[in-house]
Length: 583
Image 1 (cartoon, helix red, strand yellow):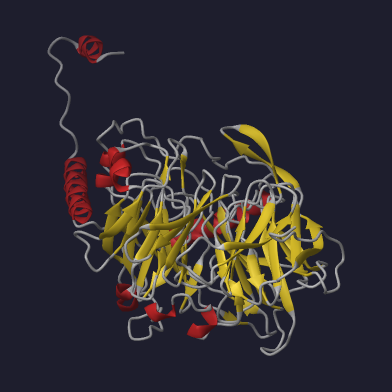
Image 2 (cartoon, rainbow, N blue to C red):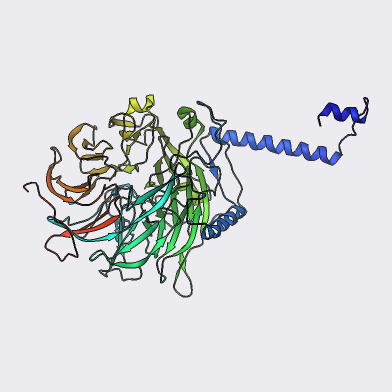
């Protein structure tokens, strides 16, 4: 019934009674609060701040989500796959537009005190060193080994390698664009971790290898013979990224998955036990999807991670042990930051801004980039005073960045991008660049084009070695770039796509290709193209990044197999030999 019909039914001169006074007051108050909230939100966006501090209600919702996950069917229901629309309705976002509401909620309790080392979490001079140089435990504990993403492992590198053992990772089904797809083995980034057996003495020679795979699990192997040393930790979907082992010796593993959650797992029980999970729908508005590909970073009891929901999180873990000596955590979400801003959405004309790379830390600043090409630095120092991270660096590269930002000893950033949108910005800048965050108004030191047309560019994370930057490209090239000026010193050509990140240990470059071969090159003289040392044929495209530790190499392929590689003169369970350049 319309308004005119209603008036007629009451008579032509009907006048409705005035609303109650309490209703008028309530409506007026609501309008005032809404206006104040909008004005405050616009001001926060103008200042470049987009931060949500979570309340107890948010944490309660998180706990409920974690409990619900156990009841979830072992399918992709509720998981947004690659190629699907964002999880928010962007129908109102036309090209060149996109107003994002900034959210802020006051915490009911004061944040905990943090143990901050004079405001500096990571000494920049530790770039290229093992994480243990910063008083962590020994091992290859995360993607690219340390907070600056610049440590690749510990030698020696096998001189005459052979496959000493292999293990089946297997396959599972995950959905892409709403359609089922079989995924096998390990993929991008898929780097194995090497660490001492939980509970073993610091000087014990008892090591485990762990790798997340497309069998939906983190798998645990003995590095010598490949036997399973611990039950797999299964998630609700495939694991594409790299896990992280707690650097402070707590028996904890942190892993993402396509099942919408980042999992914190205890390794001191009879089987891996999830203690907590961070659900992708917690912490404020999200864009794109709910996967977790990036490797977590743990610094001074803070868990730092970005998600494909386009948010950046800082969690206080509150690690400890119970009366039985079992590890515990009591997580508190300190902040959840939008990894995008209005300017980025305006420049892009879309909302594909997920964070798929692994955050890097230098000093007190966390660096990461997103699929919209936005490179950012967020200072964690304010968190020590009960505040939220402050964005101190912003640079737009014009296109998708999935490779992790790499930071050198001077705090310089090395970034590699894909070439998918073909924007004017990405054509002008190129795909590989060095940035100086101390000069935020003009940070580009140099930039290099590294594409072969649309849908190419760089997925692999660059490697720093002496005066070189090593970059593996989607079109099958390995570029040796001068760190000072970006000039190309040499180029290698291998069967692409090359998504496996270059690994350098003991003057040796190790690079996997998509024909299934693992290559070694001699980098002793960085001024000339490196000589080949050996080539080891494996089975299946090598998308994953290899791990090198104590004379062994560990890597998986897309055909479902995980390999342990060592010297040919050591005892082997099974395997093939490498061929040298003279063979």
